[in-house]
Image (cartoon, rainbow, N blue to C red; front, side):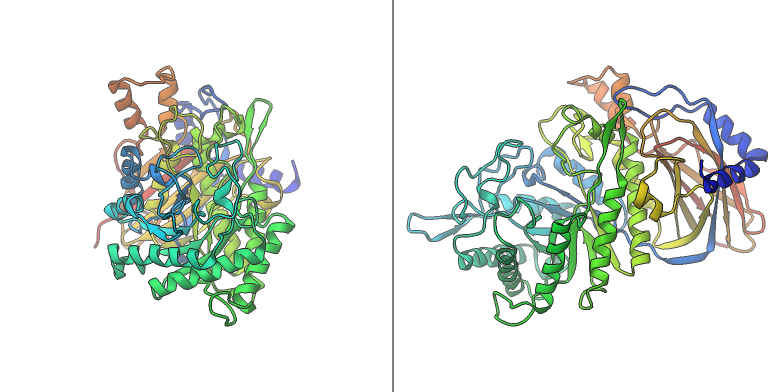
Length: 585
């Protein structure tokens, strides 16, 4: 143990006193641990030395942007299936702010049958004389589903229709074999492509109205710095320019971003992002002949790197945070773009949503509460890095939705499995409770973001906190995270919330948990014997187990001099959300 961690451990021992530690120990003795690998962890019987968290409700630290209200997926045709619509309703209910949805394959040719990493709308074909033919039938089903729940599209213009591609056959891939096929090539005719983009955006404006489409976000293609684009960077810049011009002609004032390149964690990705920003600022516009092109927000895709080590999952946040930090610095060092909003277009623990845990056991985190804990740590770290780097972080897209026709808890990166909520969805429900004003927090068990960026969380767990407030309420979200998903003791937490209104004598406290035994349908599924085809009764049990539930009833607690104290135990790879509420005086 290094000197710093030893000092922190000694401090924890000093504050582990009184009723807080006793209450936390009692709670821990009656709690179960979280999952490891593919089995159940044994019950937790001990707690780590106490952690002290202090939240000052009278000291706001700035606005809390809802960066987590963005989701994406490859398969657009899963949007309007029964389970897709069920999930859309749940996403729309996550928080008061609108959720944004991004999907690939909106212009891809095919019959509208979705499969892993594939979807199609057949929006564009040509007659025997080569004249364009447009069909918006499937497109409308996708966007209608978004509109029904009040979601906003982050419209991704892609991929290349079969009639326009310069690529050789085959056109459709058979994932994971021959993935980057004909859909990933530049167009034969940029004028026809530009007209397709114009007609597409024009149709959406006419169908959904000016007021709706002006709240949407627009972008061109996906990851053009790798095999998703079989052209040069200049070919992509041309595609971006003519597409952006077409969108703006159809939807004046549209908010257009890019380039949605891969995370700048290597020289190729870094160079591409810099080249793109330089082109948008000073390059010749391929559509208008003028200098520069539309760029209202900047996007790139940081990813982590989990491993399978000694029969357990070891998460890899360091490369993900390094890519985020590098991208932020590239933007901050670009005079024309340093204040431009940034959306992390895909911000995930690794790079293959459609690769199951059966094929890659390191993906087992996806079924567990570990996914939720990791997501919260990364989101908070991204906000911290944005503040330190001086950039405007607007959003972070979680690349996860749902997959039709796949086994229950297959270990795909998804929010629900066959209509059953996975633990990760409850992490986003917790985030949705947070108010818009962020509060000042101190914790003796939080690992600094720069340390996680360099070495991950490999020694002591990271007990991190996001606190916020709204009228007559303070929200505190606590996460206990470690890279290694192995059995471990809970941590005793002493939470102090001060700065509450003068004269307040009591407050109601609600607590919600996400761990192996709370808000976790995966644990219930295993306890049911891992049924491949659950009975109706089993399905209902799984639905109930997957919900976020309050622990017990609201607890009335005494407020002394504007301060409330609360003791509880926090399992590793888990989350606790505490809401402190009071009536108006």
